[in-house]
Length: 150
Image (cartoon, rainbow, N blue to C red; front, side, top):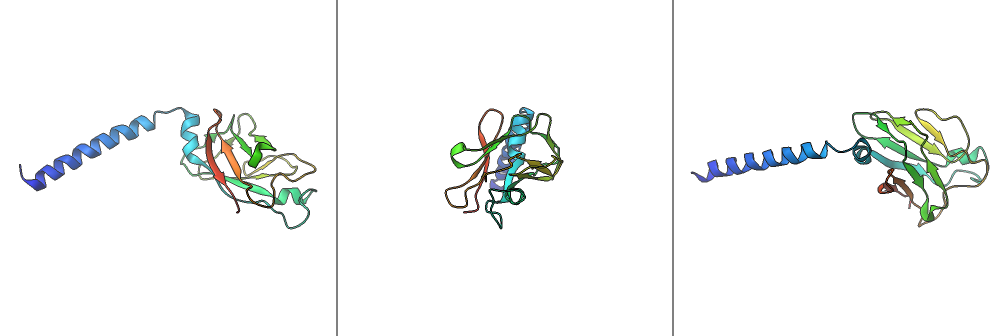
């Protein structure tokens, strides 16, 4: 067998194995699959005024995006700050649509498909200095995404 033919055969075998492994990964549970799709992409830890009070609390937030092509169920997912002083649990049955970003705001308001509210009327969630970081955890408690402004 020529060297070129051998390389093509090896490449074909490698692609076949990779395809098999890929199909196994897609057979995972919906929440495990969501883990790779849901990410904290940006945020604002320090609102332009006193972020302990409304309405400035709503100007501190993190943005969570579904980067996949299907909506993802967020039941059981949580967001918390550094030190776990503040923990937000997604509402039961809440879904993030395909390609959609949702702002998780620290203050009060009515939840929608693009805005969620921590429902805090006083006291900032995010510190305005390092080592502050936002953590997104799946229902089993595994960190699937982090983000920091620092």
